Image (cartoon, rainbow, N blue to C red; front, side, top):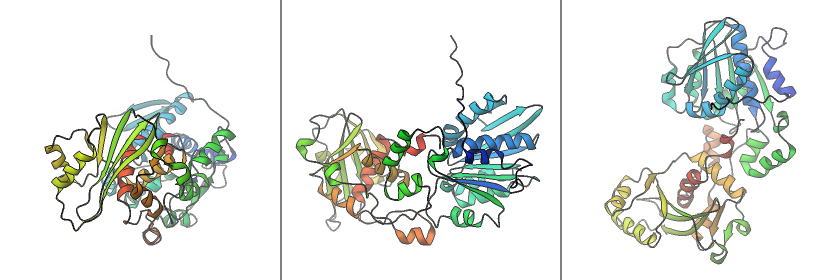
Amino acid sequence: MKSKAPKFNWKPFSRKQKQVLTWWLPESPVHDKDGIIADGAIRSGKTLSMSFSYVVWAMSTFDQHNFGMAGKTIGSFRRNVLFWLKLMLRSRGYRVHDARTDNLVTISKDGKENYFYIFGGKDESSQDLIQGITLAGMFFDEVALMPESFVNQATGRCSVDGSKFWFNCNPDGPYHWFKTGWIDKVTEKSLLHLHFTMEDNLSLSERIKARYRAMYSGVFFKRYILGLWAMAEGVIYDMFDEDISVKKPEELPQEFSKYYVGVDYGHTNATVFLLFGQQDKKLYLIKEYYHSDVTSSKAPSDYARDFLEFIAGIDNIKKIFIDPSAKGFITELKKMGVRRIEEADNDVLPGIESVAVSIKEEELFVSSQCRETIKEFFSYIWDAKASQDRGEDKPIKKHDHAMDALRYVVYTVLGKPRRSRFFT
């Protein structure tokens, strides 16, 4: 028996979503703008209205033309945007053919047909992927996560008369290139700027909105809940409360279903091993190894022996996440028969966000015996100079070795940042 194709459940649009859906119509007073920017809080209904309006505009205005659509990665775009967009379009009578191998979506209705190419704007090399194509429009989801070079290359490809740009994002820092180069220049660039909050998404209940507000604090609360382009400054994990997150050994579960280890190896810096136990979807940091005497001339083989001693007696270790740059140390561990090693995902900012949410939602706890890790929680701070001078969010590279090892495990085991799981 064939399973039924999923259908899109339409809900009433808010006033701001209606602006997104209609700003380009001939009777709109802003229809002659060259593009639109929708920024603001998570779960505010930006992506749904922006992506649908983009395609309706394209199909109403052009025939037999190429268009671009981009996310940070093609995978994230397909998951967060295209899945829902195809449901919306089909429910309104559009025919949609998705050629996944070519990342080309062909859309047709009422005798018109247009071609939508999907791109990933992950890093500086992404600009090479979009060279040479002529576009009648470009839609960027999560544009603040893309490199400026990719966005400049993509907008430069929109040379068809009447082409427009569509930018969608959650805020970053106030000196981010997109804030200073586009949002602060909407007048001279002839763009419409709409700022969204969760109140602009009529499908969210008050209970759900309260849940999201409780998930974040500090700079993440300012950006994802208030929708502000806020500076990352001060202590990174300002939500870490010893009275809640730190447990005495006797308060920890007596057994764990799985174990994980996070490793931050340093030849000229501290080396840290962290042992985590998982129980009932919660992670407990139960043991640490912290060697900071870089004058002791320890070799990778010495640290490998220390590691074997560190995990002695633990049989059901599911994964060992190690800093991918520690090639020599990984080689020594493998020589000694250590298995289940995985190079850690070292995507710093999403990892920090994942840890922050895990602390806030009481999914991560630390044994009081892990004193060095606890100290780092209170000394791990944002680099305000990097934020102000270059628009970058990054931690100061001091007192961060346990924080790195911890992030490697939490980011993979407890999941990517929660906001990336939802349609924003």
